[in-house]
Amino acid sequence: MKIPLSFISCDWGTTNIRLKVIETKTMHVLVEFASNVGIKAIYQEYLKETQIEQFVFFYKALIGLVDNLPEVYQDNLIVVSGMASSSIGMFEMDYANIPFSTTGNGLHWKLFNNLTASDVLLISGVRDVVNVMRGEEIQVIGLSSTITEYGKGILLLPGTHSKHVFFDNNEIVGFKTYMTGELFELLSKNSILSNSVNEQQWSTVSEKAFLKGLHSGFKKELTAHLFTIRANDILNGNSKSEGSYFLSGLLIGDELSYIENDNEQFILSTCSPLLKLYEIALAELFPNQKHQILDDAIKTNAVVKGHSSLLKMIAKLN
Image 1 (cartoon, rainbow, N blue to C red):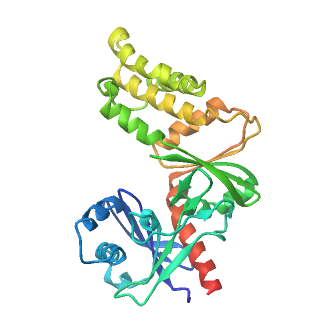
Image 2: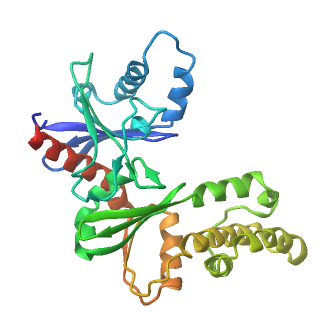
Image 3: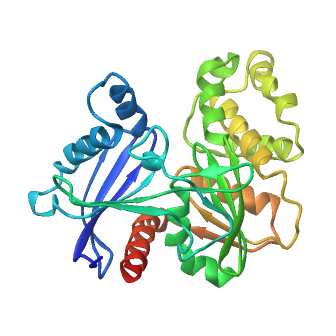
């Protein structure tokens, strides 16, 4: 496969899609487009279809989204990762197994060519015995240079489903998944706590509430303290902002509570406002351990770098 001058980086998740035209040599983003037309929405439409096979249906949807890019780039190769390789996506692919190299060697991929428009290079996810991920492995590859500097540690990728990726000597040797973001969404909007929680601006009061929740969660007292958010609202007049940040701290503390190694090294990669909360959490809970905090720009570019590295590696193999 010949390396193109530019390609389309496609991160297609459950609820959204991000398309970026990348200059292959420099990895410069030439133009981008984002939409909330995620895999789930397309799959729901596909279920109503009786005549078109699943890949063709999703391919037509993808090309329709690519049409939002400038015409000069619309025939570019599309490198796709995320939920597109799942059973509810474009084409189901087996997961690659742990361990795998931070270079991407060992991941599964499939090239679809001779299509009506752009060729598609589909990248599959990764699994171990009890866990799976689709999409985050691309970020790992994009952050490989930082991982190499550390040698061994934990890469934290907070989000709706936070990933803790364990690396050792340029290999990913395991990972954990925490539903921290989704639990916050459910508890703050669809539980009895919803009337006691409301996100507000960061302040001294909210920081105090966050740290209190953080330490309670880190002590593995999550369920014992959830209802106190409601009780403190009713009995003590705590603000909804305090309730919100206490809940955030409680969930993040619980997420980090398994870490006991005083010598553990962390790389944190996420976007604001989560970046600030996890940065505070690491400094508070592990003050003597090495932390590398990657800013929003590095996180945003990790997928692009991952796609670019994989494309170059696969092109050399073919």
